[in-house]
Amino acid sequence: MDKLEYEIRAEWDGNVGSKIKVRHFELRTDSNTDGNDSGPLPAEMLLSALSGCLMINWGRLIKKMRLKVEKLSIVVSGWRNLQEPQLQEINYEVHIKTSEPKQKVERIKELAEKYGTVFNTIGKEKIKGKVIILN
Picture 1 (cartoon, rainbow, N blue to C red):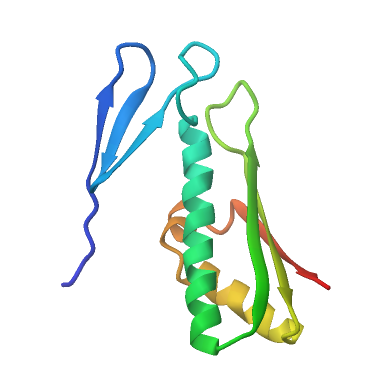
Picture 2: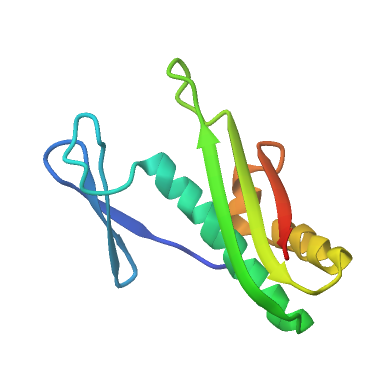
């Protein structure tokens, strides 16, 4: 069976943060309450991963379908209460400036979700997405 494998290494910074190595890239994660605020929180990195996952799929599908798109941005947000260490809800909005029919844009949303690795790992029952077509 063919598969894609991922390996991430994290090194502790001596407090609550870490330096993370992903292939030849280096990231940081930390806390803004009891750390040094030297990087995003892990929950923010999770939401960043979701936005990146969606953006890659939207970009691929726009190219594949040869759509004319002037502008595209994705805003991802989430929240948790202080009692449960879990994001309760994750929302995203795709802002797209295009003259393409709404049906084609909605089809991209459907396919981007269907083939999104991070999207499907988190689970569609927890993520609510919508598309806003800009004029």
